[in-house]
Structure formats: C-alpha cells, structure tokens
Length: 253
Length: 308
Image (cartoon, rainbow over all chains, first blue to last red; front, side, top):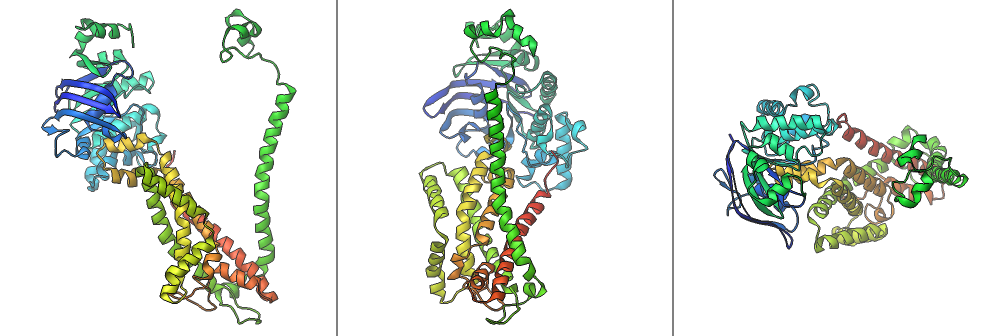
C-alpha cells in the first residue's frame, strides 16, 4: 500500500541558485498527484528532492522536512539509499540498463541489493512486468533480448516495471510520457491510473491534458514556488490564483 | 523534388533575399563540377589513408611468415635452446616465460588500471584527480627502459637476483596508465541517466559503479586492457635487467626467465645463421600469441552479449 507524503518548508539549491522556495505540500496516500508548471519552475527539482535524488548532482543541496509515511527523508539518521529504495522513480527519458536482458533490468534493483531467492525473483519480475502491462509483449524474450532493444514506449514501461520490482511505497514520475508517441502515452496513463491502487503516485508533466486525465490533485509551480495546490478539477476550472489561470488557459508557459 | 521550388509560390531566387538561408529551399540543380570533384577527392583520400595503414601491417606480417614459418617445427615449440653454434633446439622456455611474465603483468596492471580509471571517472573530478590524470599521461610516455631500470633498482637489486616476477612488475607498471585512461574514457561515455536509474532503485553508489556503470562500459574497458596487453607483450628493453632471460626451463616466479622478445633479440644479434632463422620464427610466434590472446578474450567476453 502507498503512504502519504508531507512536505514542509522545502528549499533546494543548485550551487548558489535557489530553485525551490519553502514548498509546503501534502500528498495523500493512494492518489495520483500531478505537478505542473512552465519549464524551469522547479517541478522536476521538487520530485527529485522527495527521494533525495537532487543531491546526487554536484553542488546541489536541499533543506526542509519531507515525511513519507513514517520515514523522515531528511532526518538525521536517514540513509539516501534506503530512501530511494522505498520511493521509486521513473525518468523522462527511458533509461533501461543497455547491457542487461529484460529480466535482469527488472531484477536489477533486487539482485544488486543482495536478493538471491531465484523463485521469488522470478515471481516478482513477472508480477512487475504484468503491473506495467509489458508482460505479454516480452515474456518470450525475457532472457534473450536486451532492454535497449525494445521500442521507446516499451522501454518506459520496462523502467516502470523495474521501479515497481523493488516494491516501493511511492512512485515518482518525472514527465514519464514526454518522449513517447500518443499510443504509448495512453498506455502509460492507463497504467498510472491502475497503479494508484497499490502506490502513491506523484507525476511531473508538461502536458496539462495529461494532468487532467490521470491526477486527482494538481499542484502548480512557478519560479520555484508552489502557487496553488488543489483538486485537479478546481485547478483547471476555477483556479484561485490569477497566475494559475493564466497558465492553464495557455496565456504563458 | 521539383515541388520544393514552388514553396510559398516564390522561386528560390526570390526567397533567398527574404528568408534565412536555413529554410530557403535549395534549387534542384546538378552538383557543380567542383563539388563532385571534392567529393571524389575526399573519398579517395580516405580510402588511400586506410590502405596506407594496412600496408605496413600486412607487409610486416607477410615478411615474418615468409622468414619465420620455415623454422617453426615441433622441436622449436617444445625444446629449449641448444648451446651456441649447435643447430636445432627451440624457444619453448621463452614461450612459457613470456606467458608467465604477462600473467604477472596482467594481474598487476589490469586491476590497478581499472581501479584508478574508476576513481578518475566517478570520483576524480577534483585537483587530486587532475594530478593522477597528469601522472598517468606522463607515465604513459616514460620510455620502457626507464621503467625497467626502476624495477631493477627497486626489486632486482634488493632480491639480489633477476626474476620473472620483476619482469612482470615492470610490464604491469607500463600497463596501468593505458588501462586507467581507457577505463576512464569508457566510463565517462556511460550516460548519467543510467547511473540515476540505478540510484533511483536504491542501489548504493559503489554497487552502481561496479555492476551498472562498469558493466555498461565493459566492451570498451576490455578493448583498453587488450591494447595495453598487446603493447607490453612485445616489450624487450624492460626485461633485459628484470626477467634477464634463461637458457633453461623455469616456472618459478623468483628465478630468471626466458622471454620470446629477449630470445629474439639475443638470437638476432648472434653470429649464427640457425639462430637468425629462429629469431624470425620467435617473432612470428610472439605475434601469433598476441593475436591469439586478444581474439580469445574477445570471443569469451562476446559470449554473454544479448541480441539487440
């Protein structure tokens, strides 16, 4: 089951440039929450802060409080590796491990963390690929083909399966469909809708229709601040802030 | 392509003044004589360059075969050298000795080289990394005889005897910079997104480096190792005062050892006709061993590769 996320006073920097200013946001469990906003507004930085991926970039740092379920992400004894194991991530460009088979791609997170039980591994890989709606397309070539041999849309679903295999509680998606064709995109969107039964999903998107289609809640970011955060319907029909209205009606961004 | 000329209803000549060149349609006219000539010239030059690279390589190999193949026989491959002036004997001890020295060299050079390559690529974006990178490049250019004399004074003098081990150390030191720089270059070619994918799965950094990044770059890293191996396999100068050479069998690491390159050198400058012939044969065997070892590694490492 998914868990909720509570963000309080989150600030983030790249070197001396502050890219997030005091974000407060509460993401409910087992919901899909969309993060929208123009390029460079900090939405990717925001989700990357949730699982401490932000700090893997040289000179980047973040401060504030992020609670995922009971876990204090930026708390004293918190281990970024453990955080990332419990908060999965799917990136903008499909990034399967090119030298690994399809099976090994999905199993990588488990195997490289010392998971050795062959039978359970097979089950988990099959379950994850089924969840990601990829199983039927790859079940005959699991060990024969490399992850990089799949089409772009399949690669992205492979990456989703790979993230699901480690059984995270939260799934972060950073523009997961922006590099894909419309058919693959609709498959991924359908999938996101399914996933919220088991996971809490936070999805960054450039595409406002996509946010409207998949998300129950939407947050609008502008220049590193969270301008408005409400039910998706409200954001797109009767936003409280003028800037949100200008953005969702296409007046800028 | 004719329709392109009708773009916006204006002829290319009219457009040229009004729209940037990048979007103005090119007139569909035949290539000028000069462009055809320069195309032909550039292609011809590339082909010529390729041939010029291959010619000396093939020439050396063919000449070696012509000169050496006649002296390769069972005795040459299985016997030790006969005393000076006597006909017959072989270089079996040299073949084994070269193998022994190269084993020691690889055991030292490959792990240290790959290790420092990993450091340079994954952790070495700082002053210390720059110092190591510079040192590696300098070491790459140090004449092999200097490496030999260094190992001579550090190991041979201290142990008071020549040895296969010291020869291996000298060649291993020569392998390190090549392997390290090749590993670094190959790791840097692995996109950052691959590392991020691994971090995102909760895989620790050291695990990511070894099992994801290095694995992704493995084909290039292996090529780098083979280049370094092939380069030192034929080295003679650093072995003169480390492995030293030996007329007899030796399988012990702490004893002076024969090596093909040393034996070729000794035989080639000797006054005996039979030894001259054997020197050619030894050189040929040395080349074949290097080609064989490189090919074997290629075949073994290609086995696990997946269908694209």
